[in-house]
Image 1 (cartoon, rainbow, N blue to C red):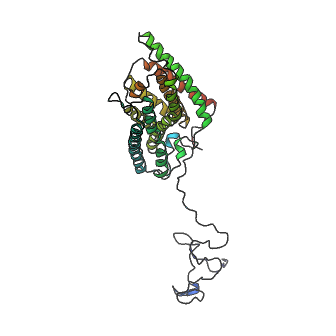
Image 2: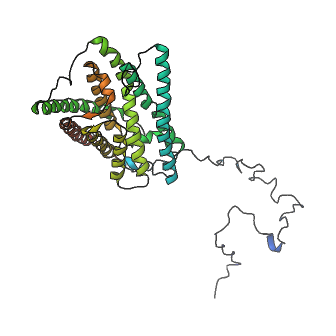
Length: 370
């Protein structure tokens, strides 16, 4: 004998029970009739408690309003540095448009700064260039314009990440979403050691092959050195950082948003970095090797701190030694580099890369996003 449980409720439809929809007409009512006595044109539940008559307001006290969608996409968790642009909003067109924006902006900003510098030079009565490959007759002023034309691109890179990729600009810095300043300072100290040893190796290679080393070190006096030193200290950190954010930050992450292996992005960034320098022969090999090792360290350490540290120290020492010897105009021309300089490159990059990996392990530097 079966137990009579009364009428069974209707089975839910293919989409499951409709918890927020109006109930069917009660007990045989015709479709379209107001169930509880509402007249024509009157909402069936108007005036009943718990139903809001105004769109956008909570249906009952304490109910949460719909939250606006945040502009920045969430940063992927557990991601490597080169994969930080793999957000839910990542699309190939964002990386293409962003890369074109950075490239065009790099050229436009450079032209604007050089034109502004030319106007200032004319107003200040600075000497005219002596040779066709010079932009300005005063090497210190020329260095300032050159450094500023690159440093001014830095806000453009951050803005492109924020507006085109819709991700937090801090993810360009590291997996922590910011520059890790204590780690950067450790890398800067190591960079000084690597540069000193690299310069010594280059000088030794030149001496052993019978080349003159007098142009590497010299002293032109404080009158000539001090103005250059002020420009170097104020602008080189921003110039070097801007290049790292472009070629090791943007390029690594734009490619890494869709490519798993970082080697392709590292090689591409290093090639672009080398192509924008005016060196030839051993010089172009030096610059490409620098870019490749810096890209590799960015991936291995989870950020740009190590590349920025070595780039800043390297450029400050290079410009500083040239200014101290009175050869700043030659440093700005770039051009040919003796092959013996590669001995210094090998020592410098080897000491720095090995030291950075050792310190990163010893200090438990995070290489993945949290």
